[in-house]
Image 1: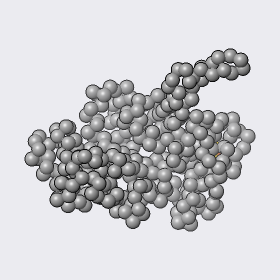
Image 2: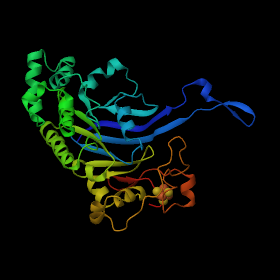
Image 3: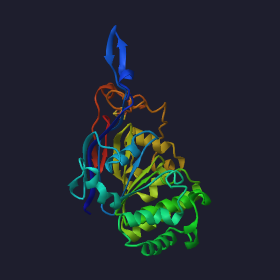
Length: 331
Ligand code: SF4
């Protein structure tokens, strides 16, 4: 399988203090400039092969969505590189990125917020088709629109309705139809089912899998729930405070999770825990603020196995078995 995207040492930071006067603080009797920096993504690396589903999993606020937005340059990376089909796109300008805006599509968590409430469904789907010249005229775009609506499980007559006339699951189907409209090759699905009822989640996941099988898409799939990524992923990375702490194939991670944080995540999902882990680990405390990252291993304040070295030295990813890596001093 050839690599579709390679993410190397990616860094993303945000400065919360935009007003210069807010940055001025008195400290030890002196006026100093102080900024509040959110360290959202702290040097992560992963590849996604063509036709593969790679998932990023972790608690809310661990940097999964920021990673997704950074690799397609909705936010400019602050460090590292992104290679797409062998081309380094890290410093590409908006004009250079334009063809990729067609090839890479996003499906969002909140389908309602991501759809224009004043547009009919047919316009939501036809507009990007015409913009990216996937259809040469409105008639052709309409025909394709109807075809896609049926593909995602909606009826042709629903093309003339507005988003508020649909249920949450149907709105997500519209979001998927909009992504399909421009014939993409890579889809980033950012928590696409977390706002939906459990019964609807399975339908949408099955739809995404069927579309992958039919069109050969690659996916970057983002979720906070291990049970959601279980069926859809080929490989996954577990994120904690903007870093990948463990990555490997679905089989490796689900049958032999080795990082204490991954094991704690599994313990929080009883149905998975029974089958995959013998010893459960309770996840204590809150995730620390990305403004003040802990020293050493970011997980040491919550880890039941933390040793002295964990407070001082950041562990790097090391190979546990072929294709399975984890970042922990005790492994
Ligand atoms: Fe726990 Fe130390 Fe491993 Fe971090 S490096 S996960 S603190 S044992």
